[in-house]
Length: 227
Image (cartoon, rainbow, N blue to C red):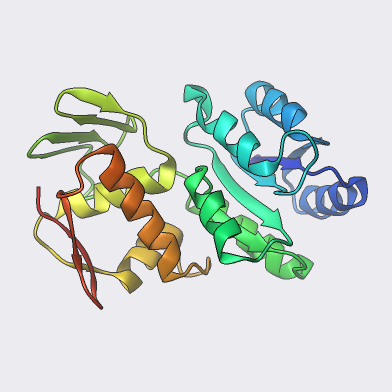
């Protein structure tokens, strides 16, 4: 039986009951929160492995909740997925900009959702890059894949899980072009469907936090780290 911990944050009690029932039935330790503020508080206490977060909630919406969770060092490695009926491109971009790892649209069949949850948790653990090394040094960047830290020009930069894994992948093989398909498979996993726009958002955020010239775009192919 799994001991993974999942936090559900939604203002609709019937959705919480439904999700909680199904997740507990397959062995997960589940907590629920009825709003964003309660979600942040519960996350601090519960230290979940995965948070399924609704986007449309009164007072503190899902975007603000996600941002507040990502501000906490203890929660920087937790996997966060929006589970929402908002399917517009701008909503998805806002979700990823806030630090989410995935964006799941409602309605979704229970079996499909359970599969997505398993995939997110399976890939939630930090995987080392570059032949299993724990330290990656490339130019002005030093990455410790075991401690989940990044130093750029000797200043520590805090990155959400997917940005960290993406940077680790690119830095582990400088000058090598990584295709979009490869990035999707290694960072999000074959079972989790993401689009090109998702990758673009994460690349843009890395450029903003580090240096816009560190990562080169190979049009129609993918990206490479040039240092």
